[in-house]
Length: 349
Image (cartoon, rainbow, N blue to C red; front, side):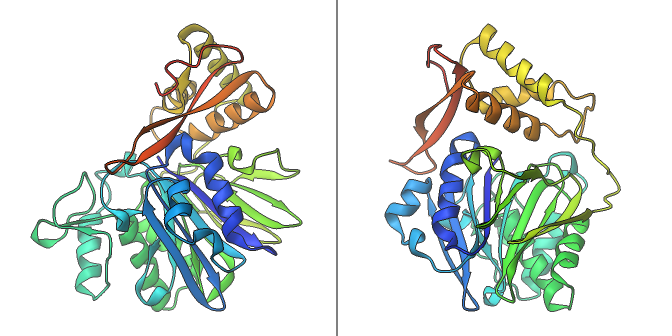
């Protein structure tokens, strides 16, 4: 699990993006963090091993120019700083971020072959390790590469071949499906964020400042006047003025969001009352058990939304602790939840 953020509007994007990430990173990220913006036809990007605070400390991320951008904070699944999102395609044509994993599609997606074909075609993959890391795509010579680096270059290849941006990301996600949400920005299209969602969450809030994108409404801070989830199995374009969504037409779709928010809130309160303080991972499993589906379930949306509402209502408390990070001497934030007034012990469970 990771956390995504996006912004397009009338203000400078970088401070807004970093705030979006900082409000979310303790839910499922905080180990690797990065940001990309577009200004005057150029991509500007920074990445580190560590959380948003480390990104601020070690780079000028907060000062990046431009009124559109993406940010990301990912889980601890291996690699160095080059394995942080966003991933930048050849000639800085686009910046790409994603949240999720192969999941249901682990044995249904030929990512190894796709990665090797892109490298053979001359694409300069950058998140490459000399050894195999986890289940990431394998390259020749025992090397491996982050799957989102592969996706970035695959989308780039479609754009270079003449596909429109939304069609490019649609084709790549149908060819290389996974339980993810992916987004990209491109200097050639400086007013648009393009996205495809399978199962992992993406919500959008729009106001007079523009459009903000997040994994969880927690990223928005105070409840926005208008916000919505992007539906599963869909392709979307986010602009300052609005959100455009169309079906992905995935063979496994459509995917119903079948967990009521009232049931999700009740399940979280019950779990915290009976089992004590818990982390997001445990609570999302509790909420996920409410679905009637065994595979391809929408579980993060109701869990994120229920937690957001319960915290806002004062029914539960959110606390932060620091846990070991992805490098020596580096820590990551981890949010935990407890009923209001309950002990904060065991928040990282």
